[in-house]
Length: 381
Image (tube, rainbow, N blue to C red):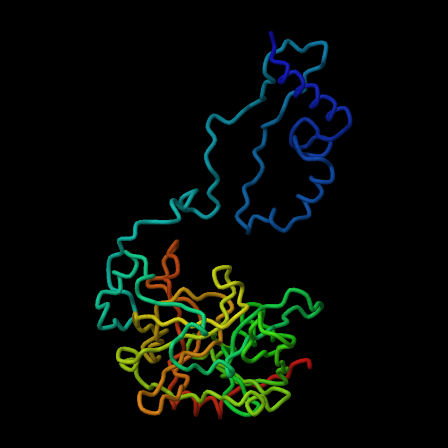
């Protein structure tokens, strides 16, 4: 006795054939055994059918034979001229499938362009263990020492040129009366090659505080010219002018003090501040601070400075926030870096980010170069 499901499937195919939804294989009424006319039209109009995209050609002579209802014997539908074997398509001359995405954690060789730290002389050891033991993260109001909370704020970044909905978020800090500092990628999208549309700055932002938050708008900015050519970590810094003397209003600023060498991070406790937007940080509603071990330095090439990498669980939303160090004598805070992005060791396929963040290596030479070799931009206000 024939399987009723098979019979129903065959009858459905027969009705489709009678209605012209597909013909008898390639070259039939619409040239495809399963697609509707509209689907076949969309397939033919797609640029992906071009062979240059590596798409497989249709298998000729591989069609479905129609079985009239009065000849249905309950047996499976035959296939005319099926291929002897079916091989996975390989459009690029290599393996049809690349294999496992995540490979062994055992990595041979020393990472390139790395400067190991004293605590981790073998950088490969960092991928064999979780790094949560090497940092401490707290809300700022839980810190025991005085912190320049008012000078650090949250950025609301409007990117879409056609809508004010769904902004992105970042962090920044006040360095002068009407000047704030952040990362360049909060200002310019190097992937889409366009500037952000409009940016608002909320110093000392605390979603749960009473009253309306202090707000100002970014009017213009300047970033290194090199960042627009190649968005490298060491050029991921920008300065923005705002429409108020916000430093005077809040009564706090944080000056930049270039650390000059990576040995500074070996011997100094550095605090990363910002508004990470993940759920574990309550979506960036309050200021957080993270203190982590110096893991290593990484550079883009032999003539580049080593960008410092610290252990932390900060992520999106913290970009542009200051890396702070406190003078042991004066107890004043200064910015010695800023959050640019996550770090990895080898950048192999399937290698995940370390629980870490990296900063541009801020030197006085780099600051001086920015004053003479910069690109400026004005925002909607």
